[in-house]
Length: 82
Image (cartoon, rainbow, N blue to C red; front, side, top):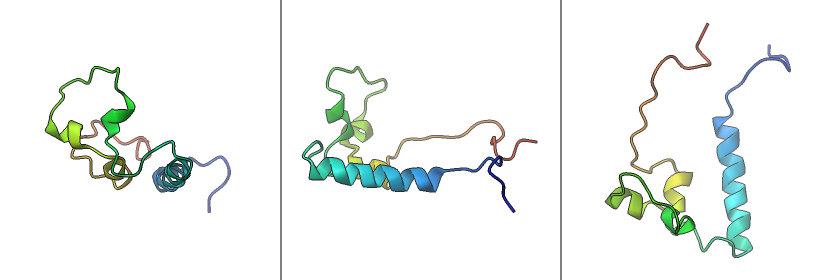
C-alpha cells in the first residue's frame, strides 16, 4: 500500500484540475473558448522558433495534449530512478 510519504505522479489529477479551471475561466469570460489560440495570451512575448504549429495551437490542443510540439524526455524518469 501507499503512505502519505510516498511520491506519486499527478499528471491525470493536474489535467482534471486544469480542465475545470479553464471551464470556469470560459464561463467568466476570461477566455473566449477552447478554440482561442495560445499565443493570443502572450501578445508581448517573443516566441522562439515561431512556426505555423505554434501560431495555430489552441487551448483545446493543450487540454487534449495534442500540441504537435516535440518533447522528448531525456534521462531517466524521476519516478523510476533508484
